[in-house]
Length: 396
Length: 104
Image (tube, rainbow over all chains, first blue to last red; front, side):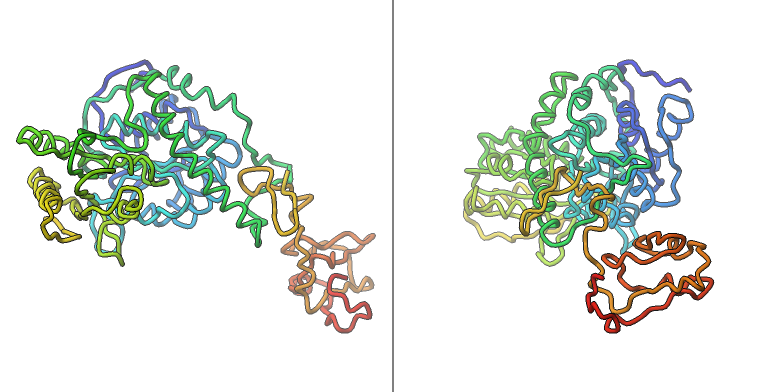
């Protein structure tokens, strides 16, 4: 199979889009372990490597913990690195996720959302990603195959930026996007080179060099630890504006953009708003259009950046609304609501006290249908009219 | 590369905790954790260097043809005593030394 590296339009799956994007960014080291529904990413990268189009060190590791440690080490040696995982694989590399983030190693990883262990479900759901939210990684969520490809490229630009130096996890729904084939614009490799060229002009990161006695990760006693944690958090805060900038410069180079941290859809003049993330946003847009036709002033806000949480952008999008609903494809144990709902509710001081409703739907591949979205919008509307409402609703 | 210590604060020159091991790896005076110190009997020692290889923080230093522990860092774990094929190293309680200083 010859792989074309010119600009092209191709019908490919979300997994293939992730693999194409990683290949186009010319990583130095790829290490990943296959797991459903991510396996195709690993297979495709292995194929690119075998065909010679992906000139990298390809490490066939024996598990995800090794995968994360290999890319972390390679990144600390100065390399551009990529890995991919899902669910059990993500939690198997849990300790290594902290290492990579703590070392400020700019690894780029795709996590294909799937329910984690416990109730064995080889099914889609965002619980895996949610469970790693405090590891210090940047977390982005993509909605379509095209957005997967574009966000992976943006991910390298973000992770390796000298102001950031953080690992980036790009999440997309397993099954719904991993195996969905749709038309994807694949940019020419020279154009991706050009887009990432700015990184070369930035000061070099410190790196491990054989024979030199430098290291990283020690000296975390007392104030050293506090100092580094503070720096890490400051870098996280810088991510927010950087995501907007990178998305804007991506639009200049490739003609596509996704709104940066959050994307709003008919939200500006809306009375009520639904907050979504990932592939379900497409369904929600269709329902919002239909309800608008019927005269209901409803809008949509898609969360694209989950870590750091886009406090300012999301507050601005939600300010002045009469009621807000948040759709979660995971659950927040201990809060009796969805995790993204819980975090959105924390914006109350910025957006004011209005009815806020948590919808838990789409766990373990349960389809979030148009009817479900209609039910949510009805409930948000009723709450906006001063009716009693239930804070958390499980659908179906 | 490393950090500057200002009173209680560590100011790192890099985003992460990068540092030069030759300057900073042994920056903590772990010697004061020690309750016993390794003492080399040079009459028994054949200079094989096993103690150097096995010492976890690598603080067995050259002492002419023999070896001695760097007492500023040696935690007194006793691995060198266990590994010495000539039984040339003994752990002696800190209290038995006149200097009475764990740092040595």
